[in-house]
Image (cartoon, rainbow, N blue to C red):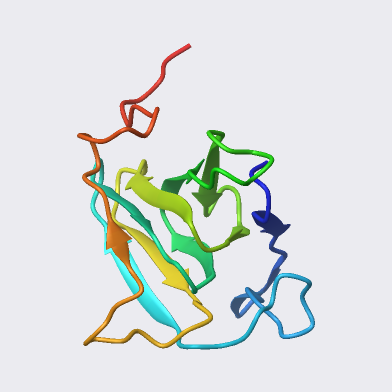
Length: 151
């Protein structure tokens, strides 16, 4: 696992009324602070990536559908420099993915329906000076191919 990345298995508690799933608590080891909570989606087969932050930590949970969340450690001083991690997250694997600054990340919807991600970043989005640095999803130096891998 890339240095600083944490995966928390989420517990779903169902009953006859529905279900409950805690995503992030302030007493979690990975909790670094609260900036905002937002939802983003992707349609089947769509890739949203790559980007990284210089200050902000992201904590992402897929609450509908399935996503392939991919992380790349581009930090030259990291013990896991150059490492790529894939996390299959969503209804069939409810996890929270905690992503530290300078770790490139993106996701691809791998379900047959729109997938929904809830993100709880540590910082509020600054519209004038965003802490968000984008890289083209396919034309870049990251050693990753978003295509499905069979077998």
